[in-house]
Amino acid sequence: MEFITLVVGPLETNCYLVYCGETRDCLIIDPGAEPEKIIKAIKENNLHPIALINTHGHVDHIGANLEIKNTFGLPLYLHQADLNLLQQAHKGELSFFIQAKPSPPPDEFLEDGQEIDFGHCKLKVIHTPGHTPGSVSLYGEGLLFSGDTLFNGGVGRTDLPGGDWSELQKSLKEKILSLPDETEVLPGHGPMTTIAREKAENPFLL
Image (cartoon, rainbow, N blue to C red; front, side):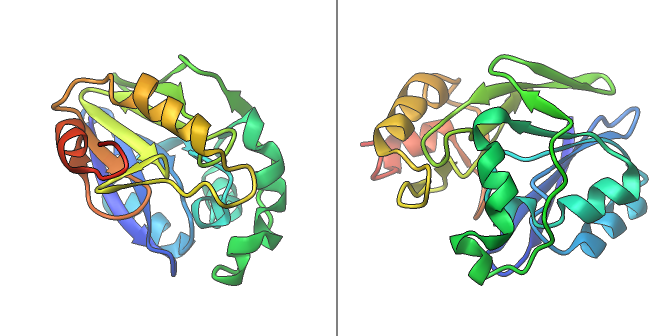
């Protein structure tokens, strides 16, 4: 499993192109903005997108859904608990920063424990509510794509609609920090980190 990180939009969202090195089959995670940049990277790296995944429904993670989905004809995956956020994202609080077209509806709802196959690789869906009700993280081969649940030195905001601090704490303790210490964490914003580092240094987890 390999990945390319693209930082997109005014809120500097990490959009990930996660792909099988053998088949070049690719998942697009959180295309928050700048669809032309994402499309160019896919073509330049000879990737074959097979699905579009939103870790949650905030506009800075879904802003390019429409263009990416239409360009490649991809199914869109989202957890059902974030459907309302997705539908309202283009006019929510964060839309002040990002002018986005309304997202198309999901083709499939993600379920906790579901595995998404691409080429010879797979990612497991972990439902991690707290930042939003339907936030998910994606785990496989020692990598965790954590969306806005866990950051390098921080955790997701819970002051936006649907946020719940107690749920976030539960998700982190029971589902994220239980992963192997060497797991590399690839967050929705900012630099990568590891589970071990966050256990030792993240002030929100001490």
